Structures are given as structure tokens and as C-alpha cells.
Image (cartoon, rainbow, N blue to C red; front, side, top):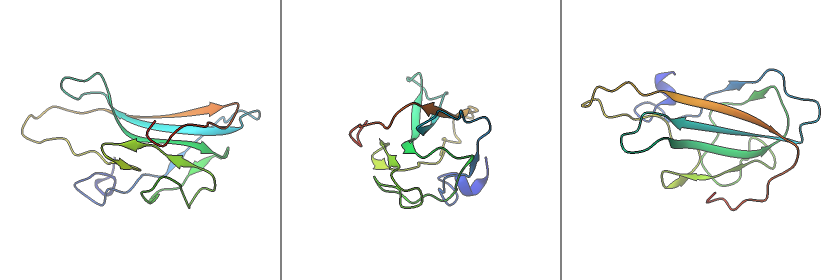
Length: 116
């Protein structure tokens, strides 16, 4: 991950290239989780849904519930705000953190509260 995508850098969401989106997909959803948080199994850093099917999610998506860069997309609340929260692991513990992006192809639009 680039420094610009970390909370230490610009805290900008990365561009994501997607291959193999099913033709029947109605929408996409994306999550980014930290799999190495002490005391937690996983900690979400980004949740976005109702993305029209596409082969690329643009980078630098602005914070906010509704995504202006992708019409109809919604960002859930993570770590106290709506939008991407870049990695910012503490350097004192010297633990390697693994951040996993997952893109889901869905067969419908989701009607979820933005706190989901």
C-alpha cells in the first residue's frame, strides 16, 4: 500500500481494479479490514456499497455518506466517520498488519443504514 493511502500520508482511498465482475451483478460492495488488531478478530477501515458494476473503483474518494464520484454508492461509518480510514498502525508494537480488500458482486441494491 502506498504511503498516500495511509493515515500517516494523505489518507486517500486507493484505486481498485476489478476483474471478472459477473454479468448478472446488480451492484458491488467493497470492504477493507485490518486482520491484525490486538483484541479484535478484524477491524474494518472501509465499507462501501451500491457501487454500479465496473472494472475500476477510483481512488481519492472523498469522505461522506454518499459518494459523489460514484452515483448511488454509500460509505458506511467506520472508526467514527463515513469513508475510507487509511492504515495507521502503531509503530511501537512492531507488529505487521495485513489489510485485506474484498469486492463483493451482489444481485441487488442494499438498503442499509449508513452506520452498518
